[in-house]
Image (cartoon, rainbow over all chains, first blue to last red; front, side, top):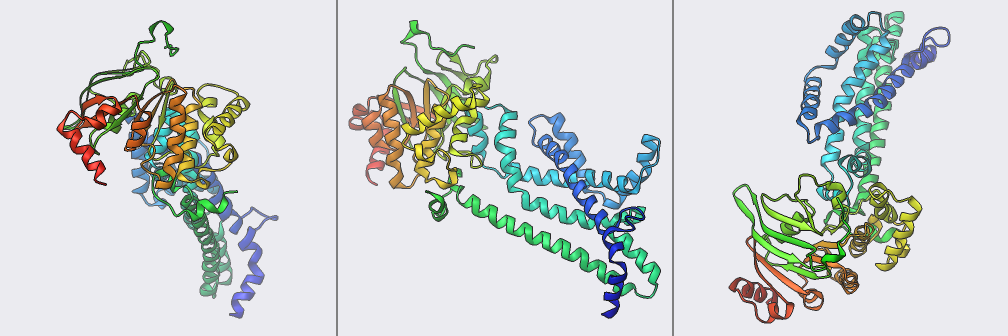
Length: 250
Length: 255
């Protein structure tokens, strides 16, 4: 136990920010940046793919469906290798590990998130679309003013879960030497040589704390959204307990 | 496409169904329906469930397509290839059984959405009109509430205001009170009655036979996709012509 604390005391900056400011940023900071940028950049892409997937036009539906099935049918590490070896060939110069990992994550997460967004769209009552079209809104206006705001809001918990997966997936960046958290832990392990159990326990605890707290956050969001929706289920024709409706009425 | 009613043809019907047929696969959902709703007229459509009433009313603004026949709304062929569907629909007031308010928007935003996005009104103009309409349905105090904070009856009244905000020449009601708790039916019917008194052309699918008696100019009775009877409420209720209508009315009374 004392070992764990002394390892932490000696190496906490390496785990947290890598060699920064004397070297490149790394550790948890890079893990976090990869996850956040990965998700933020994947989100608009995933909305586009999801819209294509529920589009009335087959020429939009097909490529989106193929993309999703291909990505979901291939392990992430294969994708990392593809991007790692093919992107430099494609653009004619080398690419940093960070960029490679980010590109990979964006494509990968976009495909998964697209299915989340699609579920959100298809989970809305059909009456929402009908009501929007009945007052004369176009398909696009209906999508952007009525459907997406509700679908994305309802999907916030699922997106947080996806964010948790992304955090864990960034650890695969290790294989192409992205200096994220796992990479930092391995560096420490190589220096100490005799304490692998302690080092990787620390690594596991950090991942766990981060992911567990985010999962809890997702659950509390989910409860909040369910409560908020309980007040509005009447709108979809289902009888709802009126407590929620009465509560806020002035 | 012009939607302004032609004053020279006051006798021209507001809604004109001519030999309308619709199939869902083998199922004949609408069987050769021909009928007209005149301008200013209130028509109540009734019949057992599955008789095609809702399907019929939904064909008017093309929430359902038809396979045969024609429908004209205010002189416009609803199924014309050249029809600008969005613009057309913005002229047809439609009220749903399940209200279908947009839960992420406030009452005012629900009402203003289409006037701003489709009619290109300014936000302030649209809001002023929304307030006026909310006053009319007795919900001015709820202008900034969200649908989830309203009772079913209040939501349906907002839905009526939302449809009226587009200044439609006619209003279609698809079982507007069927999803409501009994104590809320009255407030919605009250709004509908006042609309009828103001001369609005209305086509209502409803099971509220008292509403039909009091407000309707004519009652249509449908069964198995066909329009079986059409008459004044007095005639229909006291002297139904068909066996099916007699059975329907006696079933209603036995409840």
